[in-house]
Image (cartoon, rainbow, N blue to C red; front, side):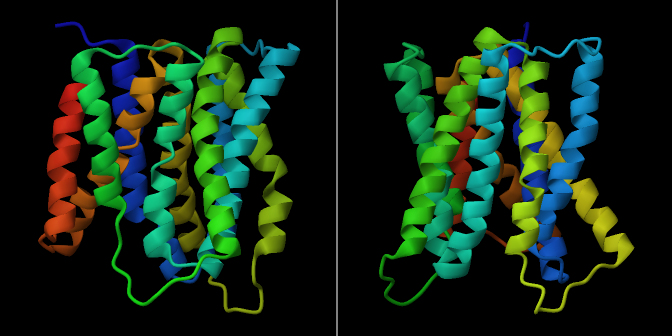
Length: 285
C-alpha cells in the first residue's frame, strides 16, 4: 500500500516534536532559561534552512508573496512562543497549556471556511477525536482559584497566532516552494533573538555549561527539523487534517516520559493516549 507524502512528513513531524517535548524541559530544569532556549532554537533553524536552500539549488523565491507568507508564518510562531513565555510567568501552566494546545481548532475552522477543504467522514471523526486527545494529553494538575488577567490575554493571543500560522503555512505553499517558506521562517526566528535576550531575567542564576548548551541545541534541532517536515506536510496535505494529526505530538511525549520515569499514567492521560491512538488511525486515511 502506497503511503501519501503528506502523511509521511506529518508522522515525522509528530515523532520529532514528541521526542522534543519529552526532553525540552531538561535544560530549563538545569538552570538554562526558556528565553535562552529560544535563542538556541532560532540558531538551530539555520542549518535546516541551509539544507532547504540546497534542496532548491540555492534559488530562493524572492517574490512578494513568498516573503510575506514565509515571514508571517515565522513571526506568528516565534512571537507566539515569546508571548507564551510571558504568559507562563504570570498565569497557571495547568490552564495555559491545554488552552494553547487547542490552536488546531483555529486552523481547522479557517481551512473549512476559506480553503473549502473537505475531509472524509472517517477523517471528520478523527479530527474530533484528535482535538479531545490533544486536550487530555495537555491537561496538567493544578489547584486553587484562578482569576483571568493579562496572562489570559497573552494565552488567547498565542492560541490564535498558532492556529493562523498553520493556515498561512498552507497558503504559502500555494504561492512558493516549501523550502523558501521555511527559509523565511528561520529568518524571522533569528530576527527575534534580541527580544528573547531582553526577556531573560539575568538576576537569576543561569547555567551556561557548554555541555548543557550543546544538549539544548540537539534538543532544539529536533524542533527545527520537525518544523521543516511540517512545511512539506502542508505542501502535500490538507491543513484540516495535518493540523490535528501533528497536534498529537504529546502522545509521543507522554509515552517517552512514562518510559523514562517509569510512572503509570493517570486516568486523564490514559484517556488521552487511547483517543490519540484512535485519532491517528482515523486521520491517516
